Image 1 (cartoon, rainbow, N blue to C red):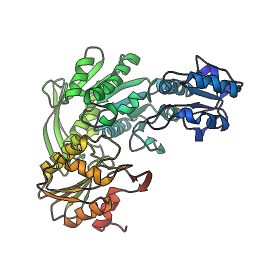
Image 2: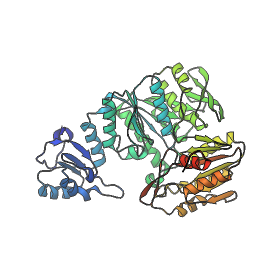
Image 3: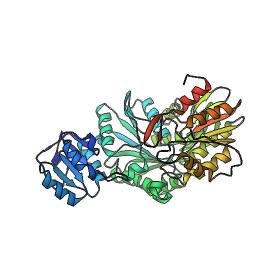
Image 4: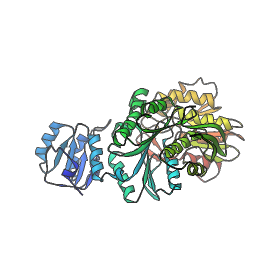
Length: 491
Protein backbone atom coordinates (compact mmCIF):
# COMPACT_ATOMS: atom_id res chain seq x y z
CA UNK A 1 0.00 0.00 0.00
CA UNK A 2 1.00 3.61 -0.56
CA UNK A 3 0.14 6.71 1.39
CA UNK A 4 -1.80 9.54 -0.24
CA UNK A 5 1.16 11.86 0.33
CA UNK A 6 3.44 9.44 -1.54
CA UNK A 7 1.31 9.72 -4.66
CA UNK A 8 0.02 13.29 -4.83
CA UNK A 9 1.71 16.65 -4.42
CA UNK A 10 -1.31 18.99 -4.47
CA UNK A 11 -4.44 17.77 -2.70
CA UNK A 12 -7.64 19.83 -2.97
CA UNK A 13 -9.40 18.10 -0.08
CA UNK A 14 -7.89 15.48 2.24
CA UNK A 15 -10.19 12.71 3.43
CA UNK A 16 -9.75 10.43 6.39
CA UNK A 17 -8.00 7.55 4.61
CA UNK A 18 -4.23 7.75 4.25
CA UNK A 19 -3.79 4.42 2.46
CA UNK A 20 -4.14 3.63 -1.25
CA UNK A 21 -4.30 0.01 -2.34
CA UNK A 22 -5.45 0.22 -5.96
CA UNK A 23 -5.68 2.51 -9.01
CA UNK A 24 -8.40 2.54 -11.66
CA UNK A 25 -10.32 4.74 -14.10
CA UNK A 26 -13.25 2.31 -14.25
CA UNK A 27 -15.81 2.88 -11.49
CA UNK A 28 -16.93 -0.76 -11.75
CA UNK A 29 -13.44 -1.91 -10.75
CA UNK A 30 -13.19 0.36 -7.72
CA UNK A 31 -12.72 -1.36 -4.36
CA UNK A 32 -11.89 -0.23 -0.85
CA UNK A 33 -8.80 1.97 -0.95
CA UNK A 34 -8.92 2.72 -4.68
CA UNK A 35 -7.93 5.95 -6.39
CA UNK A 36 -10.47 6.69 -9.12
CA UNK A 37 -9.33 8.82 -12.09
CA UNK A 38 -12.35 10.55 -13.67
CA UNK A 39 -11.04 10.74 -17.23
CA UNK A 40 -13.00 12.50 -19.97
CA UNK A 41 -12.84 10.21 -22.99
CA UNK A 42 -14.17 10.73 -26.51
CA UNK A 43 -17.43 8.96 -25.67
CA UNK A 44 -17.62 8.71 -21.87
CA UNK A 45 -16.89 11.28 -19.18
CA UNK A 46 -15.57 9.69 -15.99
CA UNK A 47 -17.00 12.56 -13.93
CA UNK A 48 -20.41 10.93 -14.43
CA UNK A 49 -19.29 7.95 -12.36
CA UNK A 50 -17.65 9.67 -9.38
CA UNK A 51 -20.46 8.84 -6.97
CA UNK A 52 -20.51 5.23 -8.19
CA UNK A 53 -16.77 5.03 -7.48
CA UNK A 54 -17.23 6.48 -3.99
CA UNK A 55 -20.05 4.02 -3.21
CA UNK A 56 -17.76 1.19 -4.35
CA UNK A 57 -15.07 2.24 -1.85
CA UNK A 58 -12.84 4.85 -3.52
CA UNK A 59 -10.68 6.62 -0.96
CA UNK A 60 -9.52 9.26 -3.46
CA UNK A 61 -10.84 10.78 -6.68
CA UNK A 62 -8.89 12.71 -9.29
CA UNK A 63 -11.03 15.08 -11.37
CA UNK A 64 -10.70 18.19 -13.50
CA UNK A 65 -13.89 20.04 -12.57
CA UNK A 66 -13.27 22.36 -9.60
CA UNK A 67 -16.96 23.00 -8.95
CA UNK A 68 -17.64 19.28 -8.76
CA UNK A 69 -14.66 18.90 -6.42
CA UNK A 70 -16.09 21.56 -4.11
CA UNK A 71 -19.51 19.90 -4.18
CA UNK A 72 -18.30 16.33 -3.64
CA UNK A 73 -15.80 17.24 -0.91
CA UNK A 74 -18.66 18.65 1.17
CA UNK A 75 -20.89 15.68 0.46
CA UNK A 76 -18.15 13.09 1.04
CA UNK A 77 -15.70 14.60 3.58
CA UNK A 78 -13.94 11.26 4.17
CA UNK A 79 -12.82 11.04 0.53
CA UNK A 80 -9.68 12.74 -0.79
CA UNK A 81 -10.16 14.88 -3.91
CA UNK A 82 -7.39 15.96 -6.26
CA UNK A 83 -7.85 18.47 -9.10
CA UNK A 84 -5.83 17.96 -12.26
CA UNK A 85 -5.78 19.91 -15.52
CA UNK A 86 -4.46 16.81 -17.28
CA UNK A 87 -5.84 13.66 -15.66
CA UNK A 88 -4.19 11.27 -18.10
CA UNK A 89 -0.78 12.74 -17.27
CA UNK A 90 -1.52 12.70 -13.54
CA UNK A 91 -2.66 9.09 -13.81
CA UNK A 92 0.67 8.16 -15.41
CA UNK A 93 2.70 10.02 -12.78
CA UNK A 94 0.74 8.45 -9.93
CA UNK A 95 0.92 4.97 -11.47
CA UNK A 96 4.68 5.28 -11.82
CA UNK A 97 5.00 6.21 -8.14
CA UNK A 98 2.51 3.56 -7.02
CA UNK A 99 4.56 0.83 -8.72
CA UNK A 100 7.93 2.21 -7.52
CA UNK A 101 9.30 3.58 -10.81
CA UNK A 102 9.76 0.15 -12.46
CA UNK A 103 11.43 1.36 -15.67
CA UNK A 104 14.44 2.56 -13.69
CA UNK A 105 15.39 -1.09 -13.10
CA UNK A 106 14.69 -2.20 -16.68
CA UNK A 107 15.86 -1.45 -20.20
CA UNK A 108 12.62 -0.53 -21.95
CA UNK A 109 12.75 -0.28 -25.75
CA UNK A 110 9.83 1.44 -27.47
CA UNK A 111 8.93 0.76 -31.11
CA UNK A 112 6.68 3.22 -32.94
CA UNK A 113 5.50 3.73 -36.52
CA UNK A 114 2.44 2.86 -38.59
CA UNK A 115 3.48 -0.62 -39.73
CA UNK A 116 5.95 -3.16 -38.39
CA UNK A 117 5.69 -2.44 -34.65
CA UNK A 118 4.50 -5.93 -33.73
CA UNK A 119 7.07 -7.72 -35.85
CA UNK A 120 9.98 -5.53 -34.73
CA UNK A 121 9.16 -5.95 -31.03
CA UNK A 122 8.89 -9.71 -31.46
CA UNK A 123 12.21 -9.80 -33.34
CA UNK A 124 13.85 -7.78 -30.56
CA UNK A 125 12.44 -10.28 -28.08
CA UNK A 126 13.95 -13.18 -30.02
CA UNK A 127 17.35 -11.52 -30.41
CA UNK A 128 17.49 -10.63 -26.71
CA UNK A 129 16.42 -14.08 -25.57
CA UNK A 130 19.03 -15.66 -27.84
CA UNK A 131 21.54 -13.37 -26.11
CA UNK A 132 20.44 -14.77 -22.75
CA UNK A 133 18.52 -11.68 -21.65
CA UNK A 134 15.33 -12.03 -19.64
CA UNK A 135 12.85 -10.10 -21.76
CA UNK A 136 9.19 -9.15 -21.55
CA UNK A 137 6.98 -7.86 -24.35
CA UNK A 138 4.03 -5.48 -24.39
CA UNK A 139 2.18 -5.27 -27.68
CA UNK A 140 -0.70 -6.08 -29.98
CA UNK A 141 -0.53 -9.86 -29.72
CA UNK A 142 -0.08 -10.08 -25.94
CA UNK A 143 1.64 -8.78 -22.81
CA UNK A 144 4.07 -11.55 -21.85
CA UNK A 145 7.14 -12.40 -19.80
CA UNK A 146 8.60 -15.87 -20.29
CA UNK A 147 5.66 -18.29 -19.98
CA UNK A 148 3.42 -15.81 -18.18
CA UNK A 149 0.85 -14.12 -20.42
CA UNK A 150 -0.66 -11.24 -18.48
CA UNK A 151 -3.27 -10.18 -21.03
CA UNK A 152 -3.83 -9.18 -24.62
CA UNK A 153 -5.56 -6.09 -25.81
CA UNK A 154 -4.77 -2.80 -27.44
CA UNK A 155 -1.29 -2.09 -28.71
CA UNK A 156 -0.23 -0.04 -25.69
CA UNK A 157 -2.23 -0.34 -22.45
CA UNK A 158 -3.27 2.64 -20.37
CA UNK A 159 -0.75 3.98 -17.86
CA UNK A 160 -2.10 2.06 -14.86
CA UNK A 161 -1.76 -1.28 -16.62
CA UNK A 162 1.49 -0.18 -18.29
CA UNK A 163 3.30 0.48 -15.01
CA UNK A 164 1.73 -2.59 -13.42
CA UNK A 165 3.14 -4.74 -16.25
CA UNK A 166 6.57 -3.15 -15.98
CA UNK A 167 6.58 -3.74 -12.21
CA UNK A 168 5.51 -7.38 -12.61
CA UNK A 169 8.20 -8.03 -15.20
CA UNK A 170 10.80 -6.25 -13.05
CA UNK A 171 9.83 -8.28 -9.99
CA UNK A 172 9.96 -11.53 -11.99
CA UNK A 173 13.54 -10.83 -13.07
CA UNK A 174 13.29 -9.15 -16.46
CA UNK A 175 16.31 -7.31 -17.84
CA UNK A 176 14.54 -5.84 -20.87
CA UNK A 177 11.00 -5.00 -21.92
CA UNK A 178 10.23 -4.38 -25.59
CA UNK A 179 7.02 -2.51 -26.26
CA UNK A 180 4.88 -1.18 -29.08
CA UNK A 181 4.19 2.51 -28.49
CA UNK A 182 1.21 3.71 -30.50
CA UNK A 183 0.51 7.33 -31.42
CA UNK A 184 -2.61 7.21 -29.25
CA UNK A 185 -0.45 6.06 -26.33
CA UNK A 186 1.93 8.98 -26.77
CA UNK A 187 -0.86 11.52 -27.13
CA UNK A 188 -2.72 10.13 -24.11
CA UNK A 189 0.33 9.95 -21.80
CA UNK A 190 0.05 6.18 -21.40
CA UNK A 191 3.84 5.73 -21.14
CA UNK A 192 4.63 9.10 -19.56
CA UNK A 193 7.13 8.75 -16.72
CA UNK A 194 8.87 5.74 -18.27
CA UNK A 195 12.64 5.85 -18.66
CA UNK A 196 13.25 4.35 -22.10
CA UNK A 197 16.53 2.74 -23.10
CA UNK A 198 15.68 4.03 -26.57
CA UNK A 199 13.26 3.82 -29.46
CA UNK A 200 12.80 2.60 -33.02
CA UNK A 201 10.91 4.39 -35.80
CA UNK A 202 9.66 2.06 -38.55
CA UNK A 203 7.67 4.24 -40.98
CA UNK A 204 4.69 6.56 -41.21
CA UNK A 205 1.85 6.00 -43.66
CA UNK A 206 -1.83 6.91 -43.64
CA UNK A 207 -3.75 5.57 -40.65
CA UNK A 208 -5.61 6.97 -37.63
CA UNK A 209 -6.41 10.27 -39.35
CA UNK A 210 -9.83 10.10 -37.73
CA UNK A 211 -7.85 10.87 -34.55
CA UNK A 212 -4.86 12.91 -35.72
CA UNK A 213 -6.65 14.85 -38.52
CA UNK A 214 -3.67 15.00 -40.91
CA UNK A 215 -0.28 13.41 -41.54
CA UNK A 216 1.74 16.26 -40.02
CA UNK A 217 -0.13 16.04 -36.72
CA UNK A 218 0.28 12.27 -36.83
CA UNK A 219 4.03 12.68 -37.38
CA UNK A 220 4.44 15.28 -34.66
CA UNK A 221 2.82 12.91 -32.19
CA UNK A 222 5.27 10.17 -33.18
CA UNK A 223 8.19 12.60 -33.02
CA UNK A 224 7.18 13.70 -29.53
CA UNK A 225 7.95 10.16 -28.35
CA UNK A 226 11.59 10.67 -29.35
CA UNK A 227 11.57 14.17 -27.86
CA UNK A 228 10.46 12.52 -24.64
CA UNK A 229 13.29 9.95 -24.80
CA UNK A 230 15.77 12.77 -25.35
CA UNK A 231 14.41 14.62 -22.32
CA UNK A 232 14.42 11.61 -19.98
CA UNK A 233 17.46 9.70 -21.27
CA UNK A 234 19.82 11.79 -23.44
CA UNK A 235 22.08 8.73 -23.88
CA UNK A 236 19.22 6.68 -25.31
CA UNK A 237 19.53 4.86 -28.63
CA UNK A 238 17.36 5.73 -31.64
CA UNK A 239 17.12 3.64 -34.80
CA UNK A 240 15.15 5.09 -37.71
CA UNK A 241 14.26 4.07 -41.27
CA UNK A 242 15.66 6.73 -43.61
CA UNK A 243 14.00 5.24 -46.69
CA UNK A 244 10.84 6.68 -45.16
CA UNK A 245 10.35 10.46 -45.53
CA UNK A 246 9.33 10.86 -41.89
CA UNK A 247 12.10 8.54 -40.74
CA UNK A 248 14.61 10.86 -42.42
CA UNK A 249 13.11 13.77 -40.49
CA UNK A 250 13.56 11.85 -37.25
CA UNK A 251 17.19 11.19 -38.16
CA UNK A 252 17.90 14.81 -39.04
CA UNK A 253 16.32 16.03 -35.81
CA UNK A 254 18.16 13.66 -33.49
CA UNK A 255 21.43 12.63 -35.16
CA UNK A 256 23.49 15.31 -33.42
CA UNK A 257 21.97 15.08 -29.96
CA UNK A 258 21.23 11.37 -29.47
CA UNK A 259 22.88 8.00 -30.03
CA UNK A 260 21.16 7.60 -33.41
CA UNK A 261 21.54 5.06 -36.22
CA UNK A 262 19.78 5.03 -39.58
CA UNK A 263 18.83 1.96 -41.57
CA UNK A 264 17.49 1.36 -45.08
CA UNK A 265 18.48 1.02 -48.71
CA UNK A 266 19.52 4.65 -48.97
CA UNK A 267 23.23 5.06 -49.73
CA UNK A 268 23.58 7.25 -46.65
CA UNK A 269 22.10 4.69 -44.27
CA UNK A 270 24.55 3.75 -41.52
CA UNK A 271 23.12 0.22 -41.54
CA UNK A 272 22.54 -0.27 -45.26
CA UNK A 273 20.60 -3.18 -46.71
CA UNK A 274 20.77 -4.24 -50.36
CA UNK A 275 20.68 -7.13 -52.86
CA UNK A 276 17.37 -8.54 -51.68
CA UNK A 277 16.33 -12.11 -52.55
CA UNK A 278 12.73 -12.97 -51.68
CA UNK A 279 11.11 -16.39 -52.15
CA UNK A 280 8.83 -18.80 -50.34
CA UNK A 281 11.71 -20.08 -48.23
CA UNK A 282 12.29 -16.63 -46.76
CA UNK A 283 14.62 -13.74 -47.52
CA UNK A 284 18.30 -13.04 -47.87
CA UNK A 285 20.03 -9.70 -48.14
CA UNK A 286 23.33 -7.92 -47.73
CA UNK A 287 23.99 -5.44 -44.97
CA UNK A 288 26.82 -2.95 -44.63
CA UNK A 289 28.02 -1.36 -41.40
CA UNK A 290 31.31 0.39 -40.66
CA UNK A 291 33.05 -1.17 -43.65
CA UNK A 292 31.69 -4.67 -42.99
CA UNK A 293 29.52 -6.20 -45.74
CA UNK A 294 27.86 -9.59 -45.28
CA UNK A 295 24.90 -11.58 -46.60
CA UNK A 296 22.41 -13.05 -44.16
CA UNK A 297 19.37 -15.33 -44.54
CA UNK A 298 16.12 -15.48 -42.61
CA UNK A 299 13.02 -17.68 -42.61
CA UNK A 300 10.85 -14.55 -42.43
CA UNK A 301 9.00 -14.00 -45.69
CA UNK A 302 8.39 -10.78 -47.62
CA UNK A 303 10.61 -7.87 -48.54
CA UNK A 304 9.08 -5.70 -45.81
CA UNK A 305 10.50 -8.11 -43.22
CA UNK A 306 14.00 -7.14 -44.33
CA UNK A 307 13.19 -3.69 -42.98
CA UNK A 308 11.83 -5.18 -39.76
CA UNK A 309 14.99 -7.21 -39.30
CA UNK A 310 17.13 -4.15 -40.08
CA UNK A 311 15.27 -2.11 -37.48
CA UNK A 312 15.92 -4.59 -34.67
CA UNK A 313 19.45 -5.51 -35.84
CA UNK A 314 20.61 -1.88 -36.16
CA UNK A 315 19.14 -0.88 -32.80
CA UNK A 316 20.91 -3.69 -30.95
CA UNK A 317 24.11 -3.08 -32.91
CA UNK A 318 24.16 0.58 -31.82
CA UNK A 319 23.34 -0.58 -28.27
CA UNK A 320 26.57 -2.56 -28.13
CA UNK A 321 25.60 -6.07 -29.19
CA UNK A 322 28.20 -8.02 -31.17
CA UNK A 323 27.66 -8.01 -34.93
CA UNK A 324 28.63 -11.68 -35.29
CA UNK A 325 26.05 -12.67 -32.67
CA UNK A 326 23.36 -10.62 -34.40
CA UNK A 327 24.26 -12.12 -37.78
CA UNK A 328 23.89 -15.70 -36.59
CA UNK A 329 20.83 -14.89 -34.50
CA UNK A 330 19.11 -13.47 -37.59
CA UNK A 331 19.24 -16.90 -39.19
CA UNK A 332 17.39 -18.34 -36.15
CA UNK A 333 14.52 -15.83 -36.13
CA UNK A 334 11.03 -17.33 -36.31
CA UNK A 335 7.97 -15.90 -38.10
CA UNK A 336 5.40 -13.92 -36.11
CA UNK A 337 1.79 -15.01 -35.60
CA UNK A 338 -0.49 -13.39 -38.17
CA UNK A 339 2.34 -11.80 -40.13
CA UNK A 340 2.82 -13.48 -43.53
CA UNK A 341 1.56 -16.69 -41.95
CA UNK A 342 1.14 -19.40 -44.59
CA UNK A 343 -0.78 -22.60 -45.23
CA UNK A 344 -0.16 -24.61 -48.39
CA UNK A 345 -2.27 -27.05 -50.37
CA UNK A 346 -1.95 -26.94 -54.15
CA UNK A 347 -2.12 -23.18 -53.74
CA UNK A 348 -0.83 -20.87 -51.03
CA UNK A 349 -2.94 -19.15 -48.37
CA UNK A 350 -1.34 -16.15 -46.62
CA UNK A 351 -2.79 -14.67 -43.43
CA UNK A 352 -1.53 -11.17 -42.67
CA UNK A 353 -2.47 -8.25 -40.42
CA UNK A 354 -2.05 -5.71 -43.26
CA UNK A 355 -4.80 -3.13 -42.67
CA UNK A 356 -3.35 0.12 -44.04
CA UNK A 357 -2.69 1.17 -47.66
CA UNK A 358 1.07 0.88 -47.16
CA UNK A 359 0.87 -2.55 -45.55
CA UNK A 360 -1.50 -3.85 -48.25
CA UNK A 361 0.86 -2.54 -50.93
CA UNK A 362 3.97 -4.04 -49.36
CA UNK A 363 2.59 -7.52 -48.91
CA UNK A 364 1.04 -7.57 -52.39
CA UNK A 365 4.34 -6.44 -53.89
CA UNK A 366 6.12 -9.23 -52.03
CA UNK A 367 3.58 -11.76 -53.25
CA UNK A 368 3.96 -10.53 -56.82
CA UNK A 369 7.67 -11.30 -56.57
CA UNK A 370 6.95 -14.97 -55.87
CA UNK A 371 3.61 -15.66 -57.60
CA UNK A 372 3.29 -18.34 -60.26
CA UNK A 373 -0.35 -17.75 -61.10
CA UNK A 374 -3.04 -15.42 -59.71
CA UNK A 375 -3.30 -13.44 -56.47
CA UNK A 376 -6.71 -13.41 -54.78
CA UNK A 377 -7.11 -10.91 -51.96
CA UNK A 378 -9.80 -10.94 -49.26
CA UNK A 379 -10.01 -7.76 -47.20
CA UNK A 380 -12.16 -5.03 -45.71
CA UNK A 381 -11.59 -2.06 -43.43
CA UNK A 382 -12.30 -1.39 -39.79
CA UNK A 383 -15.42 0.55 -38.89
CA UNK A 384 -15.35 3.76 -36.83
CA UNK A 385 -11.81 4.40 -38.02
CA UNK A 386 -10.02 6.51 -40.64
CA UNK A 387 -12.33 6.47 -43.70
CA UNK A 388 -9.75 8.22 -45.89
CA UNK A 389 -7.58 5.13 -46.18
CA UNK A 390 -10.37 2.92 -47.56
CA UNK A 391 -10.33 4.05 -51.23
CA UNK A 392 -6.52 3.94 -51.17
CA UNK A 393 -6.64 0.31 -50.05
CA UNK A 394 -9.11 -0.48 -52.83
CA UNK A 395 -6.97 1.21 -55.47
CA UNK A 396 -3.84 -0.68 -54.39
CA UNK A 397 -5.63 -4.02 -54.22
CA UNK A 398 -7.03 -3.60 -57.73
CA UNK A 399 -3.61 -2.64 -59.11
CA UNK A 400 -1.64 -5.48 -57.50
CA UNK A 401 -4.08 -8.39 -57.16
CA UNK A 402 -5.91 -10.37 -59.86
CA UNK A 403 -9.14 -11.08 -57.99
CA UNK A 404 -10.54 -8.96 -55.16
CA UNK A 405 -13.07 -10.12 -52.58
CA UNK A 406 -14.36 -7.23 -50.47
CA UNK A 407 -15.73 -8.17 -47.07
CA UNK A 408 -16.08 -7.07 -43.46
CA UNK A 409 -13.16 -6.50 -41.11
CA UNK A 410 -14.34 -5.23 -37.70
CA UNK A 411 -17.29 -3.09 -38.83
CA UNK A 412 -18.13 -2.02 -35.27
CA UNK A 413 -21.05 0.46 -35.40
CA UNK A 414 -20.80 1.10 -39.16
CA UNK A 415 -22.83 -0.56 -41.89
CA UNK A 416 -20.42 -3.06 -43.55
CA UNK A 417 -21.88 -2.34 -46.99
CA UNK A 418 -21.06 1.37 -46.51
CA UNK A 419 -17.47 0.47 -45.70
CA UNK A 420 -17.25 -1.61 -48.88
CA UNK A 421 -18.64 1.31 -50.90
CA UNK A 422 -15.87 3.52 -49.46
CA UNK A 423 -13.27 0.98 -50.58
CA UNK A 424 -14.82 0.71 -54.05
CA UNK A 425 -14.70 4.50 -54.49
CA UNK A 426 -10.97 4.18 -55.11
CA UNK A 427 -11.35 1.38 -57.66
CA UNK A 428 -11.99 1.34 -61.39
CA UNK A 429 -13.97 -1.92 -61.02
CA UNK A 430 -12.17 -3.41 -64.04
CA UNK A 431 -11.09 -6.71 -62.48
CA UNK A 432 -12.94 -9.72 -61.09
CA UNK A 433 -14.44 -8.30 -57.89
CA UNK A 434 -16.79 -9.90 -55.37
CA UNK A 435 -18.64 -8.25 -52.50
CA UNK A 436 -19.37 -10.69 -49.67
CA UNK A 437 -20.13 -9.03 -46.34
CA UNK A 438 -19.90 -12.24 -44.29
CA UNK A 439 -16.15 -12.70 -43.72
CA UNK A 440 -16.32 -16.49 -43.41
CA UNK A 441 -18.23 -16.73 -46.67
CA UNK A 442 -15.68 -14.44 -48.31
CA UNK A 443 -12.78 -16.66 -47.22
CA UNK A 444 -14.72 -19.74 -48.34
CA UNK A 445 -15.29 -18.14 -51.78
CA UNK A 446 -11.58 -17.35 -52.18
CA UNK A 447 -10.62 -20.96 -51.46
CA UNK A 448 -13.34 -22.32 -53.77
CA UNK A 449 -12.14 -20.28 -56.75
CA UNK A 450 -8.40 -20.74 -56.10
CA UNK A 451 -6.51 -22.81 -58.67
CA UNK A 452 -3.17 -24.57 -58.59
CA UNK A 453 -0.30 -22.17 -57.81
CA UNK A 454 -2.61 -19.28 -56.91
CA UNK A 455 -1.99 -17.21 -53.80
CA UNK A 456 -4.93 -16.34 -51.52
CA UNK A 457 -4.16 -13.36 -49.28
CA UNK A 458 -6.49 -12.90 -46.29
CA UNK A 459 -5.62 -9.42 -45.02
CA UNK A 460 -6.55 -7.18 -42.15
CA UNK A 461 -6.88 -9.27 -39.00
CA UNK A 462 -3.79 -11.47 -38.78
CA UNK A 463 -3.40 -12.70 -35.20
CA UNK A 464 -6.84 -11.45 -34.09
CA UNK A 465 -9.24 -14.13 -32.88
CA UNK A 466 -12.37 -12.00 -32.87
CA UNK A 467 -14.64 -9.88 -35.02
CA UNK A 468 -16.46 -6.81 -33.69
CA UNK A 469 -19.92 -6.35 -35.20
CA UNK A 470 -22.06 -3.63 -33.64
CA UNK A 471 -21.32 -3.62 -29.93
CA UNK A 472 -20.67 -7.39 -29.77
CA UNK A 473 -17.43 -9.33 -30.11
CA UNK A 474 -17.50 -12.78 -31.71
CA UNK A 475 -14.79 -15.45 -31.93
CA UNK A 476 -13.25 -15.37 -35.39
CA UNK A 477 -9.85 -16.56 -36.58
CA UNK A 478 -9.03 -16.06 -40.28
CA UNK A 479 -6.52 -18.90 -40.39
CA UNK A 480 -8.86 -21.34 -38.63
CA UNK A 481 -11.60 -20.49 -41.12
CA UNK A 482 -9.21 -20.97 -44.03
CA UNK A 483 -8.08 -24.35 -42.69
CA UNK A 484 -11.70 -25.40 -42.28
CA UNK A 485 -12.42 -24.87 -45.98
CA UNK A 486 -9.06 -26.27 -47.02
CA UNK A 487 -10.12 -29.50 -45.27
CA UNK A 488 -7.34 -29.36 -42.69
CA UNK A 489 -9.70 -29.36 -39.73
CA UNK A 490 -13.33 -29.65 -38.84
CA UNK A 491 -15.34 -26.44 -38.47
